[in-house]
Length: 115
Picture 1 (spheres, one colour):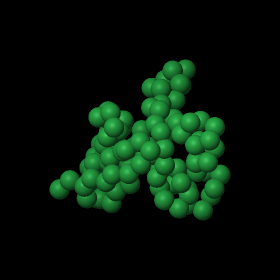
Picture 2 (cartoon, helix red, strand yellow):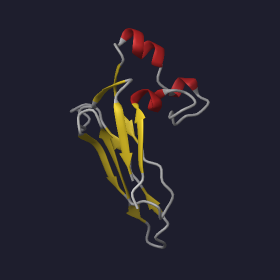
Picture 3 (cartoon, one colour):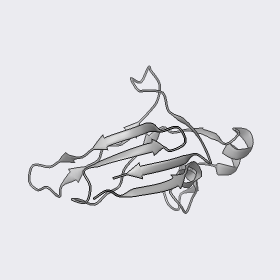
Picture 4 (cartoon, helix red, strand yellow):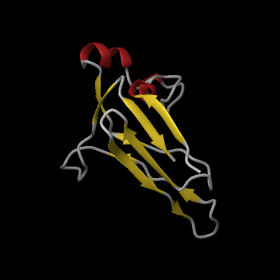
């Protein structure tokens, strides 16, 4: 089976929608500031998949506006059971950190996750 979800960039940042740190306003993006001071642009520095084994063994994050594959992760399985798996995150940063530069998105970017 394939599971696909479609959402906007703002949905990853907003407290109460996609922000991973529900309830901690300091861990989420300041959407008002991004909109007013950064022309709606932000850099994606971390993308972590969430899935319950054995429902998926990989995740792809696509920029539906450009067709660019932003992130692709494949599960690593534990030695004892197929339901013991981890989906490592995609992380971006600086060349000095040994990372690829972060993709620049906008609040209304159309994104798609495929599991």
